[in-house]
Length: 271
View 1: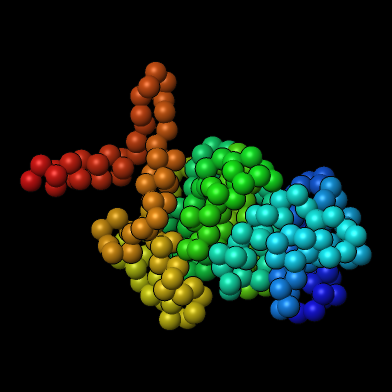
View 2 (view 1 turned 120 degrees about the vertical axis):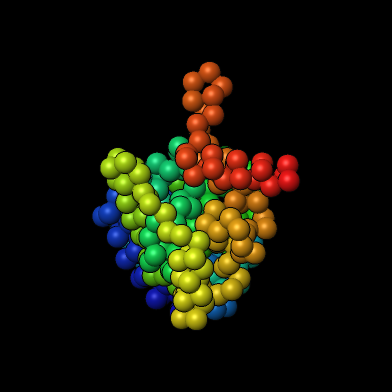
């Protein structure tokens, strides 16, 4: 992709994000990494619904400006993702309402309720809070990027990335759609998770079809508790902690499934 094409697609995706209320005002940012290593990014303090191609900034992989336009102050997040994931060519950061509600509530989107999400996205972990536009945020994201295609950032928003800007946007859209369904299902009394056997079959299908590679098996964290696909970087423990809520005077509220799992683990330790 050349620079002009990147500018054009960034503007189009920015408009879609604004139209769908994934961003308001000057929220959010997008970028595309060109084949020559330069990065085309949205400018700082600009509404994505009124952005023009000429307004986009261009930098090198260190964030050094190559034009007179100033890139978003959150460009460091994009550059980190590019460094950690050579396969990624585009990044979308936004504040979609339902996905961000999960982030504000301290919850990951990691429950296996939709087969399509397991096939094309995997779970979306929650990075600990870090001040936006600082190393606090990028350091919180760093351990999660390699094995996930989208992240939630506590009390902040969501970021998704992919081989091109449309795949990054599709993943952001899937994240938001999944969060909305999860919230609605909880209103109706709670969702029914897919079984470990069903999840393992879906993982095999997605790898055979090429939706996600074996390197993404770490995305099974929070899905498969009894298999070798458990996440080695600690996201599963973080997600479990995030789903455990403090209720009243120091009381911990667990779901029935979580209580059964804890009792099962305790029984195994005693034996």
